Image 1: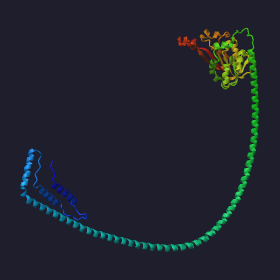
Image 2 (image 1 turned 45 degrees about the horizontal axis):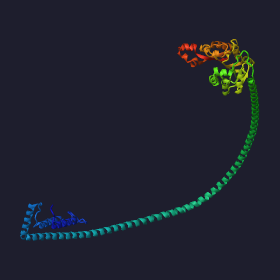
Image 3 (image 1 turned 60 degrees about the vertical axis):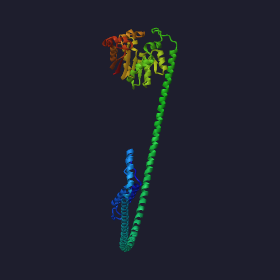
Image 4 (image 1 turned 90 degrees about the vertical axis):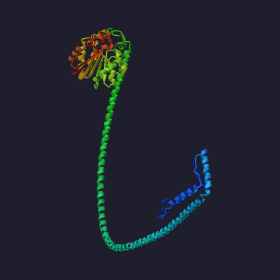
Length: 486
């Protein structure tokens, strides 16, 4: 690597400072073109470099050979030093002359800058004087405008003063006229107030008279309404009192009848010789079914007796259907010849009576019943009494009354193998066609037959039979026939 000698380093530093102070193409800050000293500066630097290079040896890479060559070159340079000494002095003098020229040119540039600065200051002062002259001229124009404005305002004020004088004259004339009209209006206003006051008192007296008459009329109407309301309340009170008295008397008689029936049922009476000596309640629970089961079967008949206040349950037994009617607010009475069954109904708070069915029906007024229910009874009657029962029910029912008779179905052969002969009091089954004939003869129409309790439900073995054969000979164990009194 080449090593820079001290002379070359000094020359390079001076060159950099000069280049920084005098850049190429520099112009004065006042706009004056200055002499370009950069080429002369480069020439001086090149001359100094050459002067510094006289007597020096070019560097070579290290090594024995190169070191010997360098030593020989330095020896020759020292020998030739006396020969080139004058040339070196001349070169240095030339460089000094160039440096002096550069300094003289620099002084020349500074002089030019001072002249430009003085010219610029003179121009700036001239500009300031011109601006002040313009300001003074503008102020003078403004003053003239203000004077003209003041003159116009003075003329306006004079005009307004004349107008105010005219206004004062007109105001005085207007005020006199206004006071005259005010007095006239005041008189008219007082007259109007007096008229309105009289009309107001007249209207008030009329309204007061009308109000008093309306109040008196309303008071009389109110007194009449209070009197009528009192009479109506009193009449309703005595009617309710009579109704409650009748209900309490009926309740007392029913309770007394219940007590008598219970006493009679509890008494140890010998059974009639024609009836078997067995516990009827135990028999019904075992072969007819629990009371809840019977109630659920009878519930299908409730819609037929809705809104019918006088229903009779012939052969009411334990009172299952009577309970359903009472729960649905349907007036009904039960009739049964068994004192124990009647006692059970009375113990439940039901309306039941111990009597022979035919005797009880004969004692009722004609066309007094709204409906008849007879469940599992006609099969207990001798055959000649069945049409008699139908005729009595028809005679005691009013037109439109409903009659429902439920009995075992003899068309179902399974009834004879299971249920019918379990009850020793059964006389003979009544076929549905015969029951329909009896009812039509008695005066019932619109007959409907419902087959109940399919035999296949209690005897699953019947499911193996053909459907048509099973429906024809093993259908419902019971049937209900429903008719309407014509």
